[in-house]
Length: 133
Image (cartoon, rainbow, N blue to C red; front, side, top):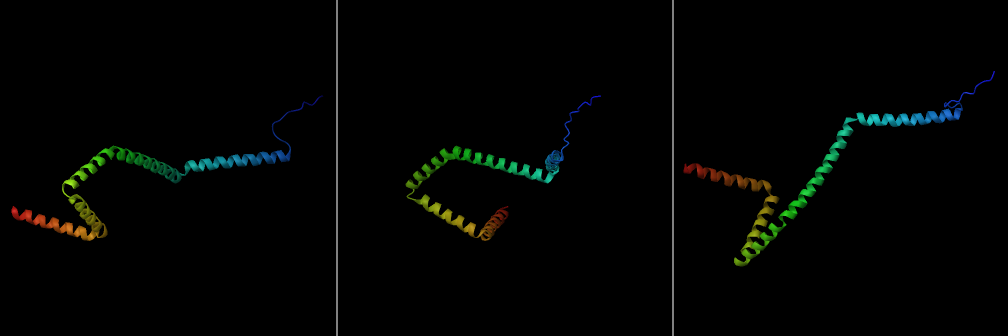
């Protein structure tokens, strides 16, 4: 009787078995991590939100660029007309610009006072209009 040698893919050496177990554990750990990531809804929402914010920022930047490019000729024309008007009025446009800038600075520095003044003006206009009826 001859014994037939059976060839097996299963390792019989204890070191090979330990190495295979270690490899299987590592693969299993990676699989568990991947499944956990798929089940972590909060992280997925956070990632999607971050992607959406990034995309929105890119679109906004493109829009700003297009608006700047589209309005450049109009801004140039407005500057030219302002300069012509300033020359015709003897510099009064610059004076008006300065006063408007001062008013803007005042409103920014004291917004409550400006809102109160505006409310007072509106109330006075309302009363005047009401008296005319």
